[in-house]
Length: 249
Image (cartoon, rainbow, N blue to C red):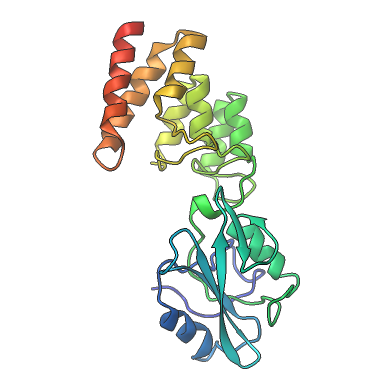
């Protein structure tokens, strides 16, 4: 059960866990407006918009009442509160309003703890894991994956400025041994980069085959693709990949 005690950013080791998913407007208002830890100036949470897919809602307590503000999604991970300034990721948006009200009735302060926002709604930046993968630093990748997750270290699902995850980078470069480490974390294989490609797209595998003649990476990704295909992966892509594998074998 989630601890509903309000917390400030300095009071928890968890980062940015003010997100509450698809709760209703009424439930959000209840969390910030009732109970022994509620009704604190600037108390807030962020939830998914049930009316506008791809957008979110900031619910906060200020001036003795509950306020709801639409967080508009502008595409490619950019968001704004109504017509306010744009921010890359919900985390950057919240961090901004934790330092100043900037049009809100109060500066954000403590929050009702929930979970971290979804990966596709976070700020995109290169992490230590991205850099370790790029350098083919096997020991570094293993160390980072074993450490507690953080914004600076990153995870297998962290996206850089181009939208690429460490899995994308390892797939493009054909680093099978690093892919094996990353895939142990069971990352979301459907995450798309800025070009709209997943780490399993034939486009990325094609680059591996043409540039390095390494067909092992193709077979490896296709096997993983068959596994994830049972969920949401396009099976036509897997079939076409096998055709390519036979051609280049």
